Structures are given as C-alpha cells and as structure tokens.
Image 1 (cartoon, helix red, strand yellow):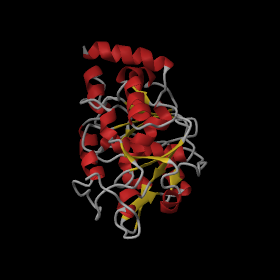
Image 2 (cartoon, helix red, strand yellow):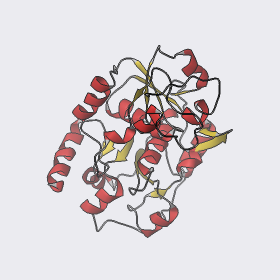
Image 3 (tube, one colour):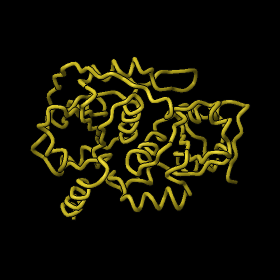
Length: 288
C-alpha cells in the first residue's frame, strides 16, 4: 500500500505544485547541480545518518530574539546564511527533518525565511527522512557535506511578515487563522511562554498538524481545501493573517496556503502570541 501511495503521489507531483516533493522524485533529482538539500534536525541525529550531500542547518540561525519573542532576521543576514549554505538564486532547495518534534515546522520556517527574501524554488520532503529511508535505504550518509559558498542575492518581499500594529488595525477586517492546538485557542490550557489565555478576536482555529497524516505526509489538496475553504471559510483571493505561539506553527499554515494551495495574499504575524498574549493592552477571547 505504501509503495502504491508513493507512486500515486509521484505521478501527481509531476503536474502539481512542487511545495511537497516525494522521496522518489527527490532521488531522481539527486544529480542536479543546482540542488541544495537542507536537514533541519539536531547535529547528533544528522551525523548518525542523512540524505547524501544534505547540509545541516539550525532554524534559529534565521531568527533573532526581541524582548520575549523571536523574529526573522534581516534580509542581509538571511542572504549571508543562504550563501553559507551554498544557495544561489537558481538553486532548487529541498528541506526535511527526521520526524522529531517541530522538525516539520522548522522546515516550513526555513522555507518562509528564504521565500520572504526571494528564493523561488523550494520544496519540503513529504514524509521526511523516514520516507526517504523507506524508499532508499541504501542512499544514506554520515559524512558532513562540503559546501561551496553560494551567491544568493536577497530580494525582500515586504508583504509577507506583519507586526502587531498591522494586526490591531485589521481586527475583524481580515480573515485570520490560529495555528496552535485548539485547547490553547479555546483558552482551556496555557500555551508555553504565553501568560494570558485565549485567542485574538475574530480568528479561527486551524491547527497546523491537522494538515498531515500520522506519517507526516501532507493531506491531499481536496482535503486541505475542505479544511481551509469550507471549515475556515477562507478565500484564495482574499488576504489572510496566520499566527500561532511564536512563528513556527504559523509558517506551516502559511506555506501550505501560499505554496501548495495558491493563496494570493497570506501574511504571517511572526511574533504571534509570545508578543500578543504577554501584553495587557491586546484583546483576547476564550471559547468558554
């Protein structure tokens, strides 16, 4: 069944968005000179085994601490990081994790950082390293990859990341979805690092993990459209704001919306609840 599903996905990939790439399709591209593969796991796990020529990267290299939360680094800093990873403007980038907590989100945040700064061709490996091992058990490496410095030139898109003022000025005017588990949205539990309970008024709950199956493979487009278009009542042509605890969870919803489903104007409130939920002058509501 697993092989059949992989084959079906691979055929579909040829005519669909490259946002998520299968292990089979990645294997076919391994010899491409402009391919760059990034592994977002920890150094110990990376050294124990990874996709050949994959480069290990810590997502937090793309982030900087601001008070009690983190934000994406400047374009100049992202450009320098990208070059250190061997990335050029024409690079085809594939990002993956090893199935550990938050590694899917680390993949989407790295993608967000590079897409925000002009890199065009980015994919996340569907099913991550576990799918790669299942399909290609002989194609693994324990060697640290040699990197030839890239010449990526960042071109910042100012229409993706937004701040607290933008959110405050557009409450109840723009569709907004929250990416945390619903218990945090409802105010039943306290989110890590967030002092106050509840969600931003007017936002809808859309937990990022509900977009994947138990093996970390993304759901079909029809299933995702059922969630976003029907359940969350979003419109692909309308603006939507995405937020979460501190940026990572929102990055996955944003990535799926823009790169997989073709939403035209999705924005990320990067500071999210680590900023909003720790102030006393921002409205919050619960579902109780």
